[in-house]
Image (cartoon, rainbow, N blue to C red; front, side, top):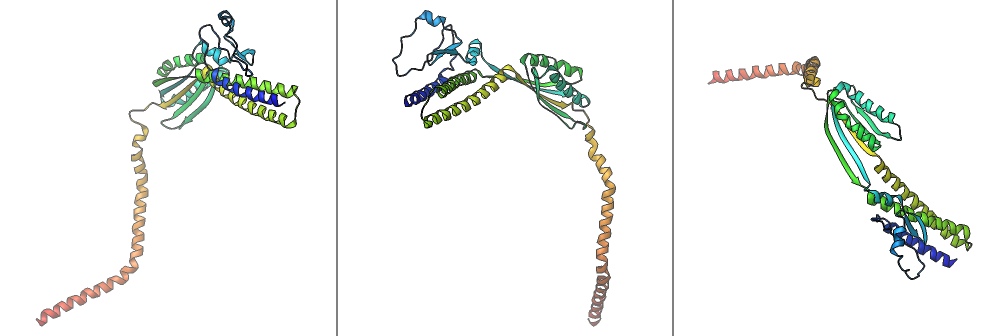
Length: 312
């Protein structure tokens, strides 16, 4: 059993290395071979004729033929590209919402296998300057046909296409690397399962194999999810549409400040009169006291001046 565990760990390390080595695309007609050996001397390379007969879709793992990851086969056929499109439309305010709804409906009518609405949003729908946003993920052919009619449609509705941007990302290396990793982990998982089913041994050894199997399965699931997401980006294209209302020469809200001023003029006048009344109400008691005192002071000061002039 210890010998089996040692071979198992060696197989795990070499298979992990295979995930990094198997990412090289096959070119020409020759195939690349990978093997796991038990400290045995390297065998002589096969004759050229045998290499030419080897299928480009196969690799050698632990002395047995298995299918090469799909990513490597696709890479041999050409680069794996992910396309992203961004288009901005300027439309009359009264039909912007209808155009947005029509585009959403067109995607939904195509079916989820062809087109999916990722996000749809309309802002200030009843206001003077509405806007909208739409993001779709669809089959490349559907996207190309849809985008081809956007400019004509915008002109017929009295609007225009403000900007149209296309970006491309090459995912060939990432897909090939991930596919090779998935293939290597799948082979290792199958070997671990076979070992658990056919070998007897100590409980501690079996538990160690089960733990290793669980780790391999978790990594395999994670890598498979990444590979599926990458392939979806290649198999479909992402389209983002931004809608904005056409700007008028004189917007209705241009004179809004003047209208608000007339509406608020009565309130401002009433508040001013109210403030004056409050001031007078607060100052009146002081005036009743202060006026006689101030008058007495003024009269006394005048008398004093007259006496000084008479004495002089």
